[in-house]
Amino acid sequence: MKVAALAGGTGSAKLLRGLSRLDIDLSVVANVGDNVWMYGAYVCPDIDVTCYTLSGIADSSRGWGIDGDTFAALGMFARAGLETWFRLGDRDLSVCMARTEMMRRGSTLTEATEKVRRGLGVRSPVLPASDQELETRVDTPMGDLHLQEFWVRERGLPRVTAVRYKGARSARPTARVREAILEAERVVLCPANPVTSIGPMLAVPGLRRLLADSDARVVALSPMSGRRPISGPAGKFMKALGREADSVGVAGLYSSFLDAIIVSREDEGMRRKIQALGVECEASDTLMRGPDDELRLAKELLRL
Ligand code: FO1
Image 1 (tube, rainbow, N blue to C red):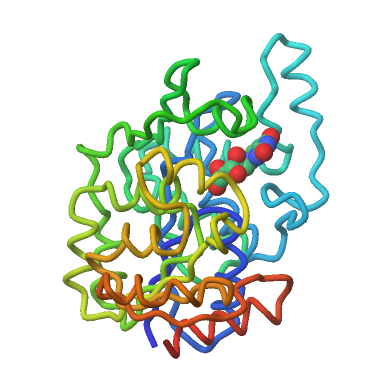
Image 2 (cartoon, rainbow, N blue to C red):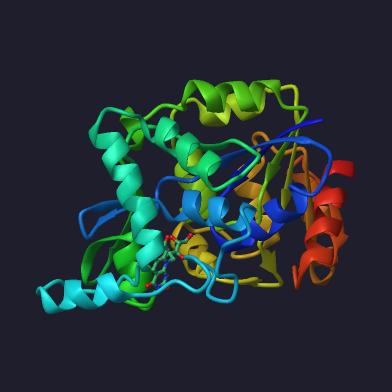
């Protein structure tokens, strides 16, 4: 079965680990809205957490970076006068520098990512949603912040008044993303922040259309449980967009192309409201505590 999975950060990576253990032809479409220029390198957190997780080198307790990484470069950046609130490890920095160098020599982000994922021994293609730069910007009372400034430097504390996807209007889905979605028999939306992980991909003109036009059944695993996200700041962002911060709100954001969603057992009572949006709904244990849950949920999504 050909499967295309739309993925953001840590929660997505866990589900991808489950999907990668199945006998399927998996392509990952990764969010690029979190990408940031840092210490002279182009850092792509969602592409990297996907590659590190699927190659077995991710630091899964932290949720980003490489297991056992050191931070010598960061210490020297600080001594040389840079702000070092973004804790990029040495090995992680090497990957980001390799990508930057390939791009400086003319590679697209897609081509650079293809080299990196092969080098790390990742079997599935990891496809940036777009090759054009696209930044998730967060409007707050302290001004307009890059998502990483909001989330890492300011610890996600400022009030969010709006979210914008800078550059989205002139971005387009890559040829490989078009092919992966149009040829898929199933598209899986990973349990990612609907506003800052899936939202930037949906903001790329033409991408929503591809999902609606694809013959694939489009299914999602909700990142919410009750009125809270399983992890991260999704609730805060959804409220800023005037959406309910729950699985009904998630289904509402995706309803123009979504066929079915798995929600937490706690949210079984939301089934009617979700079905009224034209989306089928199943309840399950949606917490991924380890490899067994990851595999179980991957199978449930492909059976849905
Ligand atoms: N998240 C943090 O909370 N603190 C960090 O210092 C940090 C560094 C970092 C370095 C590389 C990388 O790829 C990701 C990193 N993250 C860090 C995670 C990242 O900020 C977000 O969690 C993702 O962008 C959301 O998907």
